[in-house]
Image 1 (cartoon, helix red, strand yellow):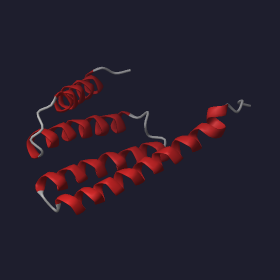
Image 2 (spheres, rainbow, N blue to C red; image 1 turned 120 degrees about the vertical axis):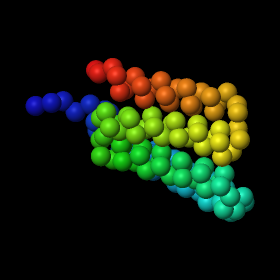
Image 3 (cartoon, rainbow, N blue to C red; image 1 turned 135 degrees about the vertical axis):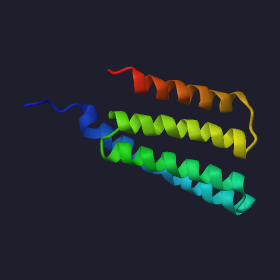
Length: 116
């Protein structure tokens, strides 16, 4: 019989509540962005990337898929798309944009070629 750890008892529920809260904030921010900027290509791209990552994290947390290789590849791909959206649609050439692009590509390539 396995022992019940505090994380198994309370941690998963706390993480799930936090994820739902953060997704609600992301949805409200997406709505506010569309309401203030309208349906511009920049705003729509930002909202789509936000919805993709929020949906992916929701799936990973609630279906215990965060430790799977397909989830990590989808997440790292989302980070790359986020960087591409910031660079091409938003015109943002900051260090954060380059960090998203380089970091996302590095994690994606690592996940593809190095098996654990």
